[in-house]
Amino acid sequence: MFLYNNLKKKSMKKIISILVVVIFTTNYSFSQKKEKQVNFYHNVKFGEQHGVFLETNNVVSKFNYAKLSLIVNNKTDNFLLFYKDKCKFIFNKNSYFPKTSKKGKIIKPNRQRSFTIKSAKETNYLVDYFSFTPDGFYTFSSKGKNVKIESFHLPAEKNIIEKGPFKINMLKLKKATQETVVKFEFTYTGNKIAVLNPANCVLRTSDGKEWANIRSKDKLIILQKNESKRFTVIFQIPAKQTDMQFAEMDIVWKNTFNESDLKKISFNAQTIEIDPVKLKK
Image 1 (cartoon, helix red, strand yellow):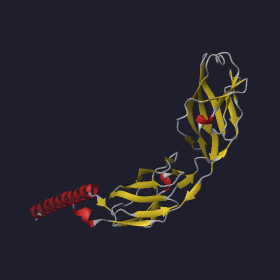
Image 2 (cartoon, rainbow, N blue to C red):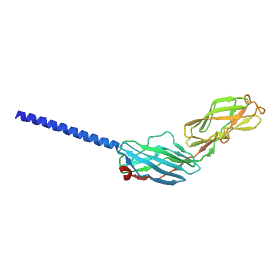
Image 3 (cartoon, rainbow, N blue to C red):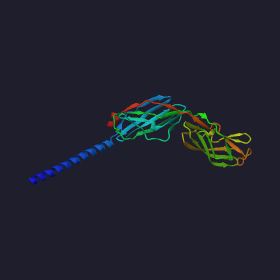
Image 4 (cartoon, rainbow, N blue to C red):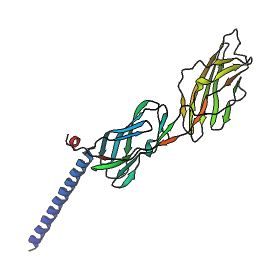
Protein backbone atom coordinates (compact mmCIF):
# COMPACT_ATOMS: atom_id res chain seq x y z
CA MET A 1 0.00 0.00 0.00
CA PHE A 2 2.84 2.34 0.88
CA LEU A 3 4.55 1.57 -2.42
CA TYR A 4 1.33 2.21 -4.34
CA ASN A 5 0.78 5.60 -2.68
CA ASN A 6 4.38 6.58 -3.28
CA LEU A 7 4.12 5.69 -6.97
CA LYS A 8 0.83 7.56 -7.19
CA LYS A 9 2.42 10.71 -5.72
CA LYS A 10 5.34 10.52 -8.15
CA SER A 11 2.94 10.09 -11.07
CA MET A 12 0.90 13.13 -10.00
CA LYS A 13 4.06 15.22 -9.68
CA LYS A 14 5.13 14.15 -13.14
CA ILE A 15 1.73 14.99 -14.60
CA ILE A 16 1.73 18.41 -12.92
CA SER A 17 5.25 19.09 -14.20
CA ILE A 18 4.19 18.16 -17.73
CA LEU A 19 1.11 20.42 -17.48
CA VAL A 20 3.23 23.34 -16.27
CA VAL A 21 5.62 22.88 -19.20
CA VAL A 22 2.71 22.64 -21.65
CA ILE A 23 1.01 25.76 -20.25
CA PHE A 24 4.27 27.70 -20.23
CA THR A 25 5.11 26.65 -23.78
CA THR A 26 1.61 27.51 -24.99
CA ASN A 27 1.67 30.93 -23.33
CA TYR A 28 5.17 31.62 -24.62
CA SER A 29 4.18 30.65 -28.17
CA PHE A 30 1.06 32.80 -27.96
CA SER A 31 3.11 35.70 -26.63
CA GLN A 32 5.68 35.28 -29.40
CA LYS A 33 2.95 35.18 -32.03
CA LYS A 34 1.30 38.27 -30.55
CA GLU A 35 4.57 40.20 -30.54
CA LYS A 36 5.17 39.37 -34.20
CA GLN A 37 1.65 40.18 -35.36
CA VAL A 38 1.25 43.32 -37.46
CA ASN A 39 -2.11 44.82 -38.38
CA PHE A 40 -2.39 46.82 -41.60
CA TYR A 41 -5.17 49.36 -42.11
CA HIS A 42 -6.89 51.23 -44.93
CA ASN A 43 -5.69 54.77 -45.62
CA VAL A 44 -8.19 57.58 -45.10
CA LYS A 45 -8.58 61.14 -46.37
CA PHE A 46 -9.65 63.97 -44.08
CA GLY A 47 -10.65 66.33 -46.86
CA GLU A 48 -9.80 70.02 -47.14
CA GLN A 49 -9.94 72.86 -44.64
CA HIS A 50 -8.98 76.38 -45.76
CA GLY A 51 -6.76 75.05 -48.55
CA VAL A 52 -5.06 72.37 -46.43
CA PHE A 53 -5.48 68.69 -47.38
CA LEU A 54 -4.74 65.72 -45.10
CA GLU A 55 -4.53 61.97 -45.68
CA THR A 56 -2.88 58.94 -44.06
CA ASN A 57 -0.41 56.42 -45.40
CA ASN A 58 1.20 53.22 -44.04
CA VAL A 59 -1.14 52.79 -41.08
CA VAL A 60 -0.01 49.87 -38.91
CA SER A 61 -0.22 48.57 -35.37
CA LYS A 62 1.58 46.00 -33.26
CA PHE A 63 0.82 44.81 -29.76
CA ASN A 64 2.60 47.81 -28.19
CA TYR A 65 2.10 50.72 -30.61
CA ALA A 66 0.16 52.20 -33.52
CA LYS A 67 1.61 54.57 -36.07
CA LEU A 68 0.79 56.22 -39.36
CA SER A 69 2.21 58.67 -41.83
CA LEU A 70 0.18 61.89 -42.02
CA ILE A 71 0.56 63.68 -45.35
CA VAL A 72 -0.02 67.44 -45.07
CA ASN A 73 -0.54 69.30 -48.34
CA ASN A 74 -0.55 73.07 -47.85
CA LYS A 75 -2.03 74.61 -51.00
CA THR A 76 -2.16 78.13 -49.59
CA ASP A 77 0.11 81.17 -49.57
CA ASN A 78 0.33 81.01 -45.78
CA PHE A 79 2.56 78.99 -43.48
CA LEU A 80 1.29 76.11 -41.33
CA LEU A 81 2.33 75.29 -37.79
CA PHE A 82 1.65 71.69 -36.74
CA TYR A 83 1.90 70.21 -33.23
CA LYS A 84 2.10 66.43 -33.69
CA ASP A 85 1.34 65.73 -30.03
CA LYS A 86 -2.17 67.19 -30.39
CA CYS A 87 -3.27 64.34 -32.68
CA LYS A 88 -5.56 61.85 -30.97
CA PHE A 89 -5.94 58.07 -31.26
CA ILE A 90 -8.98 56.36 -29.73
CA PHE A 91 -8.62 52.65 -28.91
CA ASN A 92 -11.44 50.89 -27.08
CA LYS A 93 -13.05 54.25 -26.17
CA ASN A 94 -9.85 55.56 -24.55
CA SER A 95 -7.81 58.49 -25.91
CA TYR A 96 -4.06 58.28 -26.57
CA PHE A 97 -1.65 60.94 -27.80
CA PRO A 98 1.84 60.95 -29.36
CA LYS A 99 4.90 61.81 -27.32
CA THR A 100 4.96 65.48 -26.26
CA SER A 101 7.01 67.70 -28.57
CA LYS A 102 8.54 71.03 -27.59
CA LYS A 103 8.06 72.77 -30.92
CA GLY A 104 5.61 72.64 -33.77
CA LYS A 105 6.55 71.64 -37.31
CA ILE A 106 6.54 74.25 -40.07
CA ILE A 107 4.98 73.61 -43.49
CA LYS A 108 5.84 76.28 -46.03
CA PRO A 109 3.29 77.78 -48.45
CA ASN A 110 2.35 75.53 -51.37
CA ARG A 111 4.43 72.66 -50.01
CA GLN A 112 3.71 69.10 -48.87
CA ARG A 113 5.27 67.29 -45.93
CA SER A 114 4.81 63.90 -44.29
CA PHE A 115 4.95 63.25 -40.53
CA THR A 116 5.07 60.00 -38.57
CA ILE A 117 2.44 60.00 -35.81
CA LYS A 118 2.81 57.30 -33.17
CA SER A 119 1.11 56.22 -29.95
CA ALA A 120 2.92 53.83 -27.62
CA LYS A 121 1.00 54.15 -24.35
CA GLU A 122 -0.23 51.04 -22.50
CA THR A 123 -3.19 49.51 -24.33
CA ASN A 124 -4.09 46.82 -26.87
CA TYR A 125 -3.30 48.18 -30.32
CA LEU A 126 -4.17 44.98 -32.20
CA VAL A 127 -7.75 45.97 -32.98
CA ASP A 128 -9.92 45.82 -36.09
CA TYR A 129 -10.54 49.56 -36.11
CA PHE A 130 -9.72 52.76 -34.23
CA SER A 131 -10.43 56.47 -34.46
CA PHE A 132 -7.88 59.14 -35.35
CA THR A 133 -8.22 62.93 -35.12
CA PRO A 134 -5.54 65.08 -36.80
CA ASP A 135 -5.25 68.16 -34.59
CA GLY A 136 -2.78 70.90 -33.71
CA PHE A 137 -2.88 72.79 -37.02
CA TYR A 138 -2.51 76.57 -37.22
CA THR A 139 -2.10 78.88 -40.20
CA PHE A 140 -0.25 82.19 -40.17
CA SER A 141 0.72 84.89 -42.66
CA SER A 142 4.28 85.43 -43.83
CA LYS A 143 3.77 89.18 -43.39
CA GLY A 144 2.16 89.77 -40.03
CA LYS A 145 2.31 93.02 -38.06
CA ASN A 146 5.57 94.94 -38.12
CA VAL A 147 7.26 95.57 -34.77
CA LYS A 148 9.38 98.72 -34.88
CA ILE A 149 12.72 98.32 -33.11
CA GLU A 150 15.38 100.97 -32.57
CA SER A 151 18.33 101.06 -34.95
CA PHE A 152 21.51 99.23 -33.99
CA HIS A 153 24.40 101.70 -33.81
CA LEU A 154 27.90 100.86 -35.07
CA PRO A 155 30.42 100.94 -33.49
CA ALA A 156 28.22 99.14 -30.99
CA GLU A 157 27.17 101.14 -27.94
CA LYS A 158 25.46 98.02 -26.51
CA ASN A 159 25.27 94.41 -27.59
CA ILE A 160 21.64 93.71 -26.70
CA ILE A 161 18.41 95.42 -27.73
CA GLU A 162 15.01 94.31 -26.41
CA LYS A 163 11.64 95.48 -27.66
CA GLY A 164 8.38 93.72 -26.85
CA PRO A 165 8.67 90.00 -27.63
CA PHE A 166 12.02 90.40 -29.45
CA LYS A 167 15.59 90.30 -28.20
CA ILE A 168 18.54 91.11 -30.48
CA ASN A 169 22.00 90.08 -29.34
CA MET A 170 25.10 91.02 -31.35
CA LEU A 171 27.52 88.08 -31.27
CA LYS A 172 30.25 89.23 -33.63
CA LEU A 173 31.27 92.41 -35.48
CA LYS A 174 33.85 92.78 -38.24
CA LYS A 175 34.45 96.21 -39.74
CA ALA A 176 36.75 96.74 -42.70
CA THR A 177 37.17 99.67 -45.06
CA GLN A 178 34.67 98.42 -47.65
CA GLU A 179 32.70 95.78 -45.74
CA THR A 180 30.91 95.37 -42.41
CA VAL A 181 29.79 91.93 -41.20
CA VAL A 182 27.57 91.56 -38.13
CA LYS A 183 26.36 88.30 -36.60
CA PHE A 184 23.21 88.46 -34.47
CA GLU A 185 21.09 86.09 -32.44
CA PHE A 186 17.35 86.80 -32.52
CA THR A 187 15.08 85.51 -29.74
CA TYR A 188 11.28 85.56 -29.66
CA THR A 189 9.34 85.36 -26.38
CA GLY A 190 5.81 86.15 -27.57
CA ASN A 191 2.72 83.94 -27.72
CA LYS A 192 2.15 84.27 -31.46
CA ILE A 193 4.67 83.49 -34.21
CA ALA A 194 7.62 85.63 -35.33
CA VAL A 195 8.40 86.10 -39.02
CA LEU A 196 11.78 87.75 -39.52
CA ASN A 197 13.22 89.00 -42.78
CA PRO A 198 16.74 90.37 -42.16
CA ALA A 199 17.14 90.93 -45.90
CA ASN A 200 14.97 94.04 -45.37
CA CYS A 201 17.40 95.82 -43.06
CA VAL A 202 19.72 98.54 -44.37
CA LEU A 203 22.87 100.30 -43.23
CA ARG A 204 22.48 104.06 -42.86
CA THR A 205 25.58 106.25 -42.89
CA SER A 206 25.92 109.65 -41.23
CA ASP A 207 25.07 111.43 -44.52
CA GLY A 208 21.65 109.72 -44.56
CA LYS A 209 22.40 107.30 -47.38
CA GLU A 210 21.12 103.74 -47.03
CA TRP A 211 22.89 100.60 -48.20
CA ALA A 212 21.15 97.26 -48.65
CA ASN A 213 22.11 94.02 -46.95
CA ILE A 214 23.89 92.06 -49.70
CA ARG A 215 22.36 88.83 -48.38
CA SER A 216 19.07 89.81 -49.97
CA LYS A 217 18.19 86.25 -51.04
CA ASP A 218 18.25 84.74 -47.56
CA LYS A 219 15.02 83.05 -46.51
CA LEU A 220 12.54 84.14 -43.87
CA ILE A 221 13.24 83.15 -40.27
CA ILE A 222 10.29 81.64 -38.39
CA LEU A 223 10.53 81.71 -34.59
CA GLN A 224 8.18 80.04 -32.13
CA LYS A 225 7.91 81.04 -28.48
CA ASN A 226 11.30 81.06 -26.67
CA GLU A 227 13.11 80.05 -29.84
CA SER A 228 16.39 81.63 -31.00
CA LYS A 229 18.21 81.67 -34.31
CA ARG A 230 21.40 83.26 -35.57
CA PHE A 231 21.75 85.40 -38.65
CA THR A 232 24.53 87.35 -40.36
CA VAL A 233 24.09 90.64 -42.24
CA ILE A 234 26.71 91.98 -44.64
CA PHE A 235 27.01 95.54 -45.97
CA GLN A 236 29.44 96.83 -48.56
CA ILE A 237 30.25 100.48 -49.38
CA PRO A 238 32.88 101.69 -51.88
CA ALA A 239 35.94 103.22 -50.18
CA LYS A 240 35.44 106.49 -52.07
CA GLN A 241 32.08 106.89 -50.29
CA THR A 242 33.24 106.20 -46.75
CA ASP A 243 35.73 104.16 -44.73
CA MET A 244 33.44 101.73 -42.92
CA GLN A 245 36.17 100.77 -40.47
CA PHE A 246 35.92 104.12 -38.71
CA ALA A 247 32.52 105.46 -39.77
CA GLU A 248 29.50 106.00 -37.51
CA MET A 249 26.65 103.92 -38.93
CA ASP A 250 23.27 102.46 -37.98
CA ILE A 251 21.54 99.22 -38.95
CA VAL A 252 17.94 100.25 -39.62
CA TRP A 253 15.61 97.25 -39.31
CA LYS A 254 12.67 98.55 -41.36
CA ASN A 255 10.35 95.51 -41.93
CA THR A 256 12.68 92.91 -40.44
CA PHE A 257 10.63 92.04 -37.34
CA ASN A 258 7.03 90.91 -37.74
CA GLU A 259 4.56 89.05 -35.56
CA SER A 260 1.71 86.93 -36.96
CA ASP A 261 -1.49 85.65 -35.36
CA LEU A 262 -2.08 81.91 -35.28
CA LYS A 263 -5.43 80.77 -36.67
CA LYS A 264 -6.54 77.25 -35.81
CA ILE A 265 -7.65 74.78 -38.49
CA SER A 266 -9.77 71.82 -37.35
CA PHE A 267 -10.38 68.45 -39.01
CA ASN A 268 -12.97 65.82 -38.11
CA ALA A 269 -12.07 62.39 -36.75
CA GLN A 270 -12.06 59.39 -39.06
CA THR A 271 -12.46 55.69 -38.30
CA ILE A 272 -9.52 53.68 -39.61
CA GLU A 273 -10.36 50.03 -40.36
CA ILE A 274 -8.17 46.99 -40.76
CA ASP A 275 -7.30 45.92 -44.31
CA PRO A 276 -7.87 42.14 -44.53
CA VAL A 277 -6.12 41.93 -47.91
CA LYS A 278 -2.87 43.38 -46.56
CA LEU A 279 -3.20 41.27 -43.42
CA LYS A 280 -3.13 38.02 -45.42
CA LYS A 281 0.07 38.93 -47.29
